[in-house]
Length: 356
Length: 275
Image (cartoon, rainbow over all chains, first blue to last red; front, top):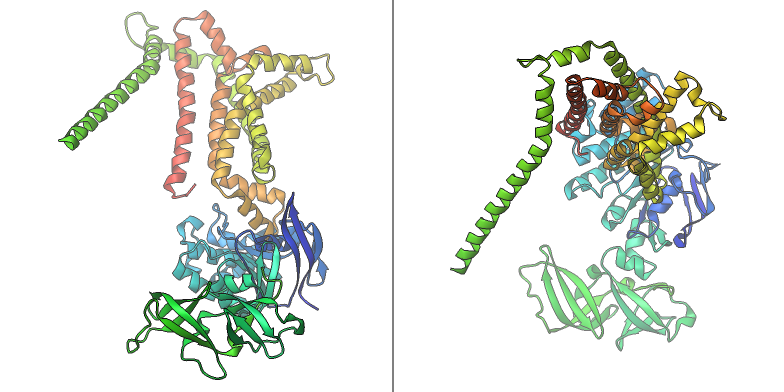
C-alpha cells in the first residue's frame, strides 16, 4: 500500500484555478520534489498535504488514514519554511523541543531528544542561542531539527534553500538529503530550481500552470522530457519543428533536411508537424556520417563560458545551441561559417503531441 | 564658472534650510516648554518669598490624592489587561485570516478619537442605568467595570495601533503555521508564540493606555467614580498652587510611561532583533 496517496486533488481560489488535477502515490522513504515556476501550484499541493489549505475536491490519504479534512496538528507532518519561521522568543533548544513540550513529554525526554537532534544537525554548541544570533544556514538547520524532533510521518520542505546564498544552498541540500536517507523519512521538497531538483530527488513532479507536466526520476525528466514545457524548464533544450515523413522508420524532415529518430512514432503521424528536442550536449561538430543525424547550419554566435564553449547555429528559422569542451588545440568555427551538426538517432526526442 | 555658481547656490540653500530647521525647532520647543516652565515655576511659589516644594508636599500628603491616584492606577491596570486580551487576538485574527477587514477594524478603533468621551458616557448611562435590563450603575463595583470598559474603548486607538505594528513586524503567518505543524492548539499559539513576539508592541500600548487613564476626567466624573481626573479638577477649582503641582506630577507620570516605551523599544533593538 502506498504511504501517501493523493487522488484527484483540485483547488480553486475564487475564480482562479490553482490546481487542475493532481494524482500521485508516494512510497515510504521516498524523496519527492515538486518543480515548477512560481504560481504553478506546487506550493498549493504542499500546503494541502500540510493541512493549511482545504482541497476543493479530492482526497489525501496518509499511511492509510484519510487526512483530507484533518487539522494540521493532528496530521503529524513536519514542515520547513522558506523564511525559517523559528520562534524568535525561544532559544534553539526551546525551538527544537517545542513539539514535545506541546505534547507534554517529560523535560528529561525533551532534553535528550533536543541533544540528539542538535547532534544530527551538527550544531550542539548553539543550544542556548536565540535565532537572531544564527546565520541563515544555521537557522534553517535548526528549523529542520525542529520539524523532525517529534518524528513526523512526512517532512515537507517549502523552498527551504531559496533564502540562502549559493554555497550554503549546495551544502545544505546535500545535508538534507543525507539526513533524509539516514532517517528514512518520506519527504516532499518544493523548489523552482531545476538543479536542486535533479540533484536530490528520487522522483520529480514537474508542474506548470496548475497541471502536472511529468512525473519521473531525475534522469527520466532530463533525458526524456515529455512536453515542451519540461524540456525547456529542465536544462537547456533546442526545440525544432519537423514534419514526419515515415513513422515506421522514424524519418522526419526539418528545414528540408532528413533526420532519423529511434523513438517510436504512432503510425498515423505521417505528414504531421511534431516538436523535436535536442540537448546541447548531445550535438557535436562533425562531417555527416552514416548511422548518425546531420544538420547543416550557420554559426551565429560563439560564447566562451570557461570549461565549455556554447555555439549558437541557425537552421532556417530555428536556433540550435550546442556545447563543445574548451580545447586550446582546436580551432573554433567563426561567425557566419557553415557547419554540420552531428547527433545520434537516440538523441533526437519527439515531444508529446499535446506539447504547447 | 557655472559649476562654481551652482555649488555656491547649493551651499547657500543648505545653510538656509538648516537655519529654517533651527527656527522651527526653537519655536516649537518654546511653544511646549514655556507654559510648562511657567506652571512649574508657579507651583514652587506657595511660600511667599522663596521657592519651595510646599505645594507638592501638600498634594502628596493629601489622603484624597493618594486614594484617587491609587484608584486610577488600579483602573489603568485593569484596562490594560482587558484591552490586551481584546486587542491582541483581534489584531492577530485580522492579520492572519481577515486581512480584507483591516480597514474596517482600523476605522472602528479610531472612532474613540472622533466621538467625544461625553457622548460615550451618556450612551452608557442611557443603556446601563439602574432601570435598564443590565443596571451596571446600580452598585459601585459594576460601575467600576463600566468605567474600565469605557477606558478600554478610549485607549483602543493607541492599543490597537501599537499591537498591530508589532504584529506586522513578525511573520505571524509562518510562525502560526510552524506552531500548528508542531501540534500546538490556538491557546498555545496565542500565549506561547504570538504574545511573546509582540511584547514590545503590547508594552507600548499598555503605557499609552496608562497615560490616557491617569488623566481621564469625563467618564470618571459623570459615572461619579473617585478617580484622579476628577480630583485634579476639584483641586484646580479650589486651590491656587496645588493644581500646578498636580499638573506637573501628571506630566511626569505620562513622561515616565513614554520613557518606558523607549526603554523597552530600544532594549529590543539593542538585543539585535530585526523587528
